[in-house]
Length: 250
Image (tube, rainbow, N blue to C red; front, side, top):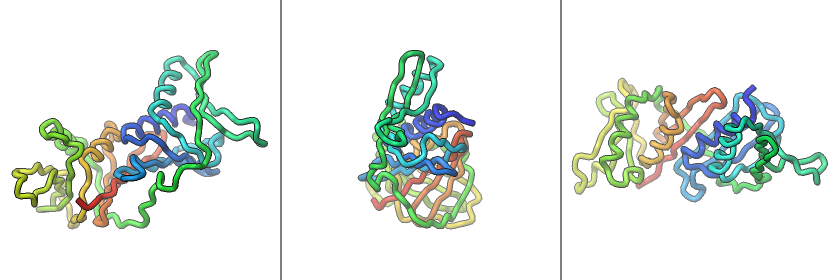
């Protein structure tokens, strides 16, 4: 079984690469689920993680905040061959889980948990979607996307759109309809596309790059809905991740 420390390390690495600062952990009898968004007021990235193992110590619902600090504490504990568990508030009967405890020798660091008080918008529900295209996203295609970054000012803030043309799935960076923009970059992400993909929305280049960093060296399953959402799936061995990018009108 994957230990609590390994599971928390996995989620903090992924979430911080997505610029997610706080997550909601729901511990059920049959599953441990972690959810979060990058910005509750302006959602660009939604993360949903289901662990491969159930963690009884986390039964209930908690908020885990300040993930970058937790990531550093976990790394420090790992370097010192420490252990990771939970601390319980003994004023309750039965005692309630109140913090993540990282113990290294005689030193114990506590990372306080929030008790079931996250605002509802922290976990955004997209509802039912039809996925019009599914394929394994090759790293060789995403490298072409990332190579453009150094050549464009404020690349992360640029928008991109998705279209199909000549059976190819194409990312267009910038607004090709804007007469002031000449020669906008176009990248072929996938070939042999038999479905028209024409979502009338855009996405941020920075959001896509964050997902690619979260995927690491994996080739994620990528799905696109003409309703305006991109979804990525990958498995770290510790957990299965579903990451969604909801599009927006420019």
